[in-house]
Length: 157
Ligand SMILES: [Zn+2]
Ligand SMILES: [Zn+2]
Image (cartoon, rainbow, N blue to C red; front, side):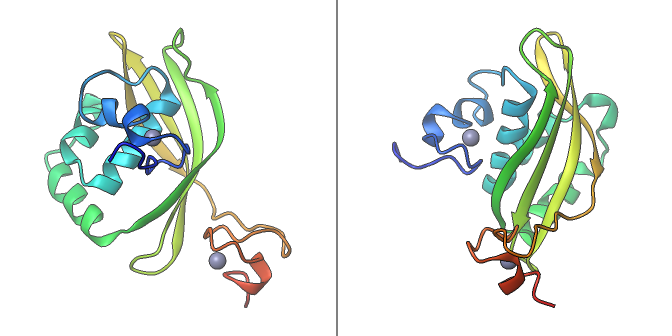
């Protein structure tokens, strides 16, 4: 397990990246770290962590069922952080824009601008705004991570 890369796409070993967060050993120091660790928790089916890092004002009784369904239905393929605003250790709010790619039930992408708040030293996911899917230029790599040009992949229609 030592050298396994973290699911969040950081290119760091999981043990030195999201694992200490999702296992509750330490708290994510930045909004981006929390966002990455929540993505990792989705990949690993760690519902408890997803609920614990969702801001209490936004939690619903149905969350556990909804998350279980989502985790079962969706096979995540990769995460790319596109932009961040604030969300650093001295801040109390932050924004992270990302695109996450899945291949089940059909290949697709989640492009979202997420808002985070920090209370009593802990970052929480507040809410997300869905953005339109990324459409690369025809000769750029496809958003799906296949390595093919967009025009030869999911832009081919
Ligand atoms: Zn990670
Ligand atoms: Zn593609």
